[in-house]
Image 1 (cartoon, helix red, strand yellow):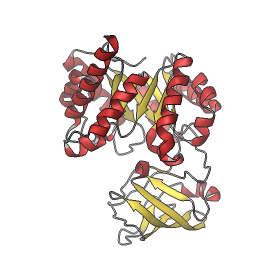
Image 2: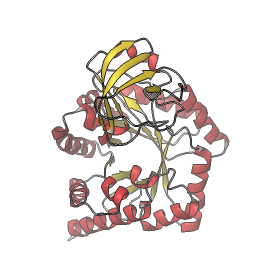
Image 3: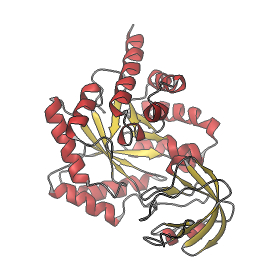
Image 4: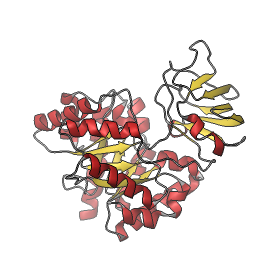
Amino acid sequence: MLRSDGLRTAIVASIGRAFCDPQHIARGIAAGALNMRLALGLRDRDLRQDFLAVRAAMEEAGRDALVLLDLPATRPRVGAMERKEFHPGKNVWLIDAPEVDPGDPAAVPIPGLANYTDAVRPGHRVVFRDGRQVFRVNTVNPGRIEAECLHAVEPLQAYNGCCFPDSGVLFRPVSSEDRARLEELADAGLRPDWAAVSLVNSPSQLGEVRAVLDGVWPDNAIRIMPKIETGFAVDNAHEIISEGDGVLVGRGDLGIALPPERLPLVQAAITREAHAQRKPVAVATQILEFFASTGTVNRAELSDIALAVRDGVDGLVLCQETSDSRYAIEAIDLLHRVIAVESQDAAS
């Protein structure tokens, strides 16, 4: 289970650019985040240093915290480039290359893109950062896609992950580069408590992850948390949850794959299925993003949290709210206070 300090729902805080100093993390632990998420997909971060920072923070706070390592699957990511602005109607070239001519504002490098272009068709969407940038494909060539921007609320930048919600693209759960980074952790004597597995479509993928973890940590006691993020995963939720040790509803990608009006219903259904199988269930994405970006309390976010707690969600995952926000501690504190009120109400 996740650590919740006696409350109904645990808080998971994500380590990142704005939340990586041991003293800062220690304040987050004191505020109620007793579980820390490390994202393996952030290639610009030293995972060992982040893990050691969490350990140092635990010592400073005098508390233990569980570590959840988020495996990104083989989803392609933006290569080396400066931030680029796109606006609706503007075209972009997605190119299978580690980098592109910095003087070309329309070119975006996507290393490994050629592995997925066979499944992509004109009219399909290419989506970055949980829908913050959405493009519609116009033409497809091997390793090269020309697309039109439909929606963009922030610049596109290096390491942003992309997905193809209309294309039926299947990703392997662990890449060779990911395995090498896991081995670096093991060589440093570091081992996570949980491994979250992105973009799971089949229970067999979890068996592959267990085999990798067993190979890296022969005394493996790491629990596996598949992430329900695709329509296929929703259709196969019973089998996927059965194979895992818990489950995470990844609302970012899932909210793109499904009609948005279905998302609350699916979240509740996954929660009930996890309870029926006596497995913990966590929910991630857009828990307190408005608050984390503005410092202003959003009533809809509070209601979303309260409903999740009442539904029996075991964990709420703060992603950008801590990893890339100057309000990281405030977000943890606010989330903890809402959970505490809901927990007291349930107990009375």
